[in-house]
Image (cartoon, rainbow, N blue to C red; front, side, top):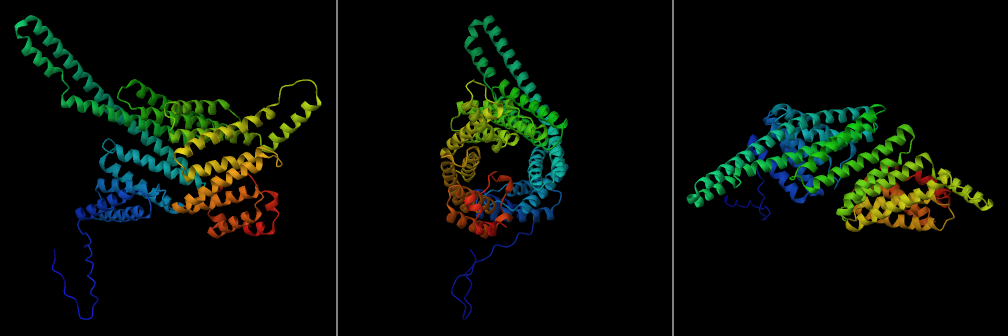
Length: 521
């Protein structure tokens, strides 16, 4: 411990804090980066974690400046940049997120180049993930051509990675089989030897136990096979997700080809999983989740590209998710995804048959049935209205089950949105309307509380906007004005995410108010 310093005349008697000297060597700088990242890991989320991660990023950059060709520094820095870009508490601004992802992509590429494709499998896989996240940001920015480029590059990388992994896995399989054959051969020799020399049974029996007991090398080989198999499945499912995203952004016939290729990836992953005793149940669940996602997205794409409603895609997606929930009733992701698929199905119906058309057809059908004595089958539009209501109601049931397990802001928003959009499927005079509006208000208010704690300004602004819509349908005029005022003060339209908005207008009781026009224009 250094000797205490003498106090200067007139100086405060508070002990001085001795600052840690700034590292100057490569090793010390890298150690500081790793130490700061470890501190961030302890908090995992929140402002403190983010500050530690940002400081770690600065030291990784300094270490890189001292030794530009160190692949480990480039990889670790890229991995941390990707983590910061996908941070949710607090979430980075869109511009910052894009910059972080672009820098992560650059570092992963450089690290992969330095070590080569075979040794750089981890760098390549994370590079594909970073490109996929960057594509999502670019899509939100309406830069679809650049997003498509990122997705195609990510797919090509994963194809190359899978080839490397498959060769390693097959080599491991051959080693395991040879060892098994060797053990079996030795066992047969021991048995034959015992039969020819009965007096030496005990000694040879001991040798037989040594020959057939698993060696350390065999255990390592089995473990290697299991790890590599999990990596194989992970690569295939990730590639399927990227192909799925890509198929929704391109035109035909390329879209269909990409969907079929993604299906082939998942079929291959399922084959690996079902044929290997070392594959885990979680791997099987992940495959089913990605398959449901692919099928549901294909249903949406068919509506967007062809204006065709292919019910079977949504139906098959639900079967995949139901199989998971049957064996894992509290699987939150499966429950949420089930709600998403049901909402997507209902949204697809409303895209091709708007709510006003469905209500008009149902009203016309009711009038014709009351004035006609002959029975007749309902029209397609008449049949679609109750189906759409049922789909949203079932989605609410799935979201509610998930909410009971994990009451997150995202689930609160989903529950609010589903209640709010259901209002469009009823006449304005229906007694169901205020009930649905009240339910939507309840969940939006909880969402606002959680988003305030999470310091998610964009999410908060969007929830306030939708909360004001729900209040308008409850005829809570004064409260609606208050919430819209808070929304505008927070940032208004500049922060509101319209991609997450609900397709419903303000009720006339609010839309006609002078203050309403002033606040939203």
